[in-house]
Image (cartoon, rainbow, N blue to C red; front, side, top):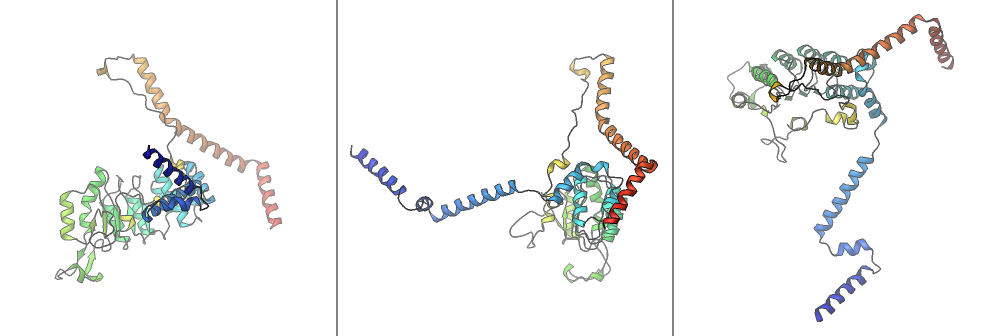
Length: 357
């Protein structure tokens, strides 16, 4: 009985304390330790920050780049003229969108290359030695580049890259069997060759002592590097650090740059404000496969032909739509050039603009 009375009294005192004239937040904070208050404040601020980021409106430039990226295949032929006066950041954003949409090739990259770039991500694209060489000749200030999963780039393209881009510090490679093979063949290119082999340490070398090779390369991101290649680099070129891991203390006492972290995408900051739906692959129907004979289901020959035709028609549908859009644009241009009415309307609009100016 006494326990019940003491419990009721305690609850009454707590209610009176909560209903006092003091602010509610102050009353709740009085029950917490300073550490709990700090944690609660940080959680509240992080939630508010996340909410603000979700409700943040995208800039007009990002919206325009999103629309351009969704219809990028329609303007590839005229992309060099369209992007001639674009800022370097805008050109890099278009390259990043084209890479994500699996449209990046030599022509697109060369038409958008800007000599002020310091990073370049062409991973998983159709860039070949020709495109890489042309860009290396135009953009000699590259500091970081990602050529991973580029099956058309060989040791010749990497050699031209190293030869023209003397400021290259970060190289990301590998990722597929052919790219891994290219990386192994490039070890002799990446190791600097010396004019003076009598020096006692790498720290005593001058830039004039290095005859050839990637003298500025410091970070190599190669996820599936083999043991022989790793040992060869560690022995013959120890200043090239392979696959550094993020750490507050750095890697071998050196702070690891953001572009050299293995688990990041090099061009993510460029498209941070652009809607991911821009490069989302949509409208691809699932493949219709013919059941194998081992399943015990034997389809008639006519049904097999029908399924093969449906699969081919589904695969070629995007290409037909693209060709139809191109024919429509050509027809409109031809009509503008041949029709007298269209010419008169164009001349009248030009005259009106000149009068207003």
